[in-house]
Length: 119
Image 1 (cartoon, rainbow, N blue to C red):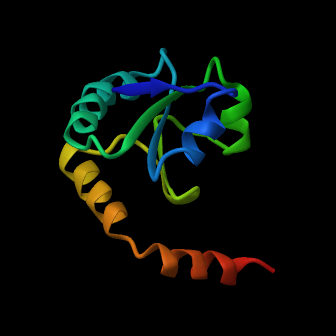
Image 2 (image 1 turned 90 degrees about the horizontal axis):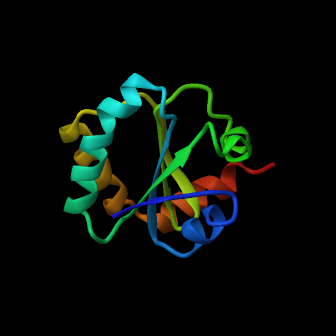
């Protein structure tokens, strides 16, 4: 199931799940509409991952916070850290490969890298 997020549900969704995929989209966006069936199909293959959507027309504040300039944009959070952020629709095989890579991440190593980047 893909959950539609808004400013009230966004933070609890990210904080309450290990891996969260966010699809930033808009109803008028052709590539977004073309990607939607792929996103839905892949979401059913990964029941342990929380799949969400943010309608950038209705949730402009969220889109602004994450500096969304092109849609669709896929963002993947793992343990509250953005581990993937890319504009453009992914083919199904590349999307599944990306999810497998995210699941395999050593999050202790990721946290060390994030800490090293902070001034």
